[in-house]
Image (cartoon, rainbow, N blue to C red; front, top):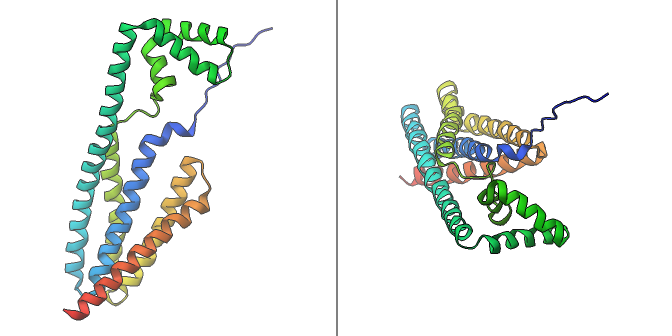
Length: 233
């Protein structure tokens, strides 16, 4: 008695495109905005000045993240497209050489020359460019560059991350604003690190320690600078 069934697999690498942009955006939003707030507050500024600086940092940072991600990932996309165009021309000009090139790749991976030629022949009969993109160029549907997705994800998560220390400015007493923002931001960073690690299938504590260490270092540096220049001015 035979049974037909579907075995659906979900691999964590499928999340790499948006996960990288999301973690980077949220982490940068928390660290940069909290550091800015701590630095301005350490210079003995009032609550309104601190809020203005924080909101300006949120808007500027979100736009910068969106533009930076779009330009960076667009460059990657342009490079991928140029490689695909060149491969398309090579397939049109010398299909036999390209077939042998693909077979040689499979031989290096462990197939016999006869089987490698057969595999290359069958794969190229269905989708020659796709076979070469995957196995020669390393370009796949999972890893291909998506500039708009990266830009929007980074901007949105930056704004979400930056809003957390800004909220602490509103609810914290002015005399305890610096330690409150710093402590809350480290907690936010720890939660973010844990979520990012769990989503990516990595060790949670490593992710938590990694982001909190650099966040604490950034806030300590800006607090020292704010205190120094606030005292001098």
